[in-house]
Image (cartoon, rainbow over the protein chains, first blue to last red):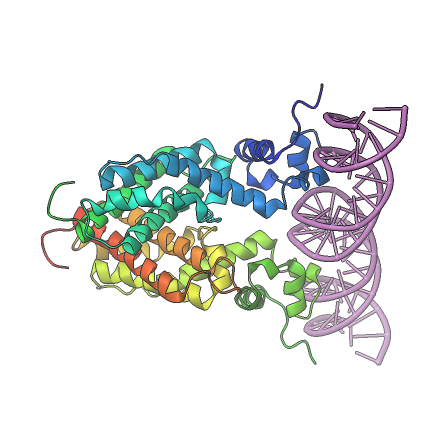
Length: 191
Length: 191
DNA sequence: CGGTTCATTCTAACGATGTTAGATTCTGTC
DNA sequence: GACAGAATCTAACATCGTTAGAATGAACCG
């Protein structure tokens, strides 16, 4: 009965994911969001500048979770393959958020911490510059979020094709891209 | 002074591209669109069911243009490389449309005509099934539209990074993907 | 030329959206 | 209990997509 907890940016973001997951992005308005928190729409603006900032927080949250899975010392292919699969898993768990992640780039600061780890992993076993390495990771990110958008873009409605279709598509896309990295930048050695 | 030409779906679509190119997707409303045609918003609904259908027409128009560039008898790599570059060129010419193409899949009927040509090209020089071939083309499409969204997503504002940045990104992404196709599905022969 | 019919566009309004200003209530401190 | 600041509310604004129904236009028929 007591208004549970007071409002803050984190609880608002939680409610955003809640709506995205259950009702889809089309149902996400400042009013429905406020209603879920037992509050009026205008109150949200005390904690958050506007709706665009909320969507940015969604994109950043997802990217942050992905970056958190990066562990040092793994071979580049395991690393990139892990990023692709983790990203897909997160977007499958939050289908409504796919429409956000595919459209909204994460803020640069989200990656700052992870970049050195990424570069270190990729530069052992590949022959490439930092710029190229980052472009490759970004490309993989774009590819996976784009596929997720095709699959979950009209959540919470089910995808047009059966899950196996998108599973195959994902495997083909990611494997092909990573094989390309190997072919283009791989050194002779394994790993 | 005479209202130039009467309204029809094609002229409306032309005005949509006009606004997308010059003002960006944020400026595209049924009212601004009608104003550009010297007409009131409600009149549009006599020719077009709703705004979503207009965006679908944009996505279909772009995909149609790409499919029209497909000429039989080219080697698979030229073909896919051509698709990637043509798609990018079109989206650079219509920066505001990138935000549409990246989000809205083209209608299946747009591809029907081109699919046999695609499959024929890809099956000479590659060892893969029809399903895999189509997934590869779709992946390339997703990749290029995703990159274009990152570059032109906030048109008509200029991109965040200089053009050379996105040029390099595009080259790396597409080359890597195509090298992956070669590595994964290529036969021994050249072409 | 007058009248009829159909196609096309208009006026006017509905409900919903993001957002803001200003009043109100709540919470904690002296 | 009075005060101060934080947090929320009420109310409204402009804009959006969309619809119903009235007004206009053009073409054809007598």
